[in-house]
Amino acid sequence: MSGTYGTVHADDYTVGWICALPKEALPASLLLDEEYDTVLDDPTDLSAYSFGRMGDHNVVIAILPKGTYGQVQAAVVGTNLFRSFLSIRFCFLVGIGAGIPSEDCDIRLGDVVVSAPDGGTGAFVQFDFGSQNADGSFRLKSRPISPPVFLLNAVSKFETDNEQGNAPLARYISDVEGKQAHLRARFQYPGTQHDHLFPPEYTCQATDGGGVCRSCDRNHVDPRRRAGPRPSTAPVVHYGVIASGGKLVRDPFLRDHLMNTYKARCIEMEAGGIINNMDCLVIRGVSDYADSHKNDIWHDYAALTASACAKAILGYVHPVPAQGSRKAMEARRKIEEAKRRHQAVVDYLAPYDFSKRYADVLSQRHENTGQWFLETAAFQKWLTNEGRMLWFSGMPGAGKSVLLATAIHHAQSLFARQADIAVLFAFCDSRDTANQTGENMVASLWRQLVRRRVLSEVECADLEGSYADAGIRPSPSEFTAAF
Image (cartoon, rainbow, N blue to C red; front, side, top):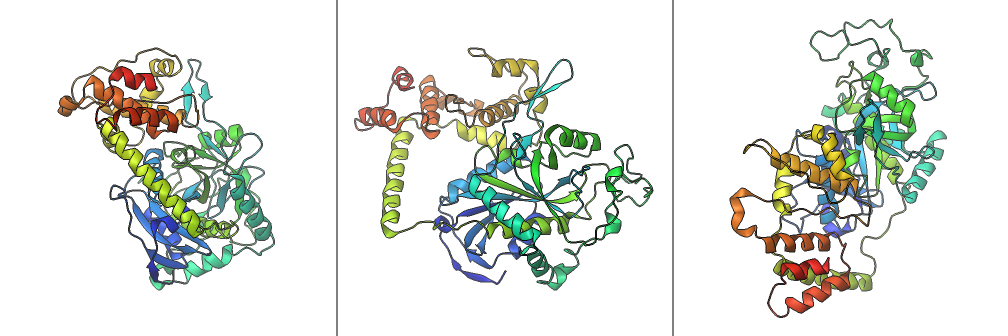
């Protein structure tokens, strides 16, 4: 990072970069060629950002709130990112993950895994997204998803050059290691003595549960690691399926199951909240093997190798101007003005927005809360059958609102890319009964259809022009007729 260059407008950023942890964002910030100041136009976006340039690209680095992680928080940060920075074309999800060594893929700590499709599996698999059957089997409902072609082309170019030693990966790692003296030791390669792959059945012998492995018998070696040390400690980049789930995995048997079932190379926790809604490339530095021997020794170095690899790949992505010519900018200004007028009319016709209460409850939900409910037979039956009612009952404060928010978020994620299905809701609040009338509920459903662009512009304009110009609001039956 060479210091502050100046102020850059939010619309001038074309690349999003999402990190779950500050220790993942630190090397990314150090790899910025220039740092910028930017003031957001949207005061409701409270996400933490760093701004700068990498090569020919203006980059926004977004960090999840301190102490939080997982798919829900990643989805919130990703939504804010794409709402506040309108020119962003795609995002990188960069940080640490658990490697999955196999007989044909010698993954080691400090290596990097880049999401790429493998056959018909896609580049990602949400391994815990599905239903548990009565016979103990699990039915996966995650769809094959891969990064867009232009990102996969960049990955191919990087791979070709990196294999020949022509990619700048090693230089970027060296740049960070030598930039600030007080951080030098933090980002150094920890050493092969701290990289040991134990057999799945051999659990960590540490009595404090910290997984440092001082008491573990190094004579126990997984057959996949009997090839011995590598000739170089430079990180190797691997390409393949990344498995994403809602829980931290410290189970080598599950790890190997993901490898055998989905050809997964790596496990992480945030991609499931991002990949369904935006073009994304996931890049993970390997910091552990998803077993009981997991510890923090490799976190900083793995975060560095992932960030260096991401910047190197970004160099192979052709830059696109954020705003283009003056004529294009003027056209965009007119479009934005039309959007503002349209939103003002929507606010008038359907002033009560039930999504605010939903967003508030969802933001306070802890990771995996309500997961048990999503796996119940009652919820799965309701989810797959039309015309059924699912009734929540319980004492005040029992958690009904959290379960409802969990169910809504799950359904929206499940049907995000199905144009013939819209997930609508009226999320009520006992403290605001005056506004929760039948008229406002129906109007809110119409508002959600407009927001999700399920209704065409013509259908919206008919209703807006008929009533907003006259200074009156439609009746519930007239709203439902517009559905």
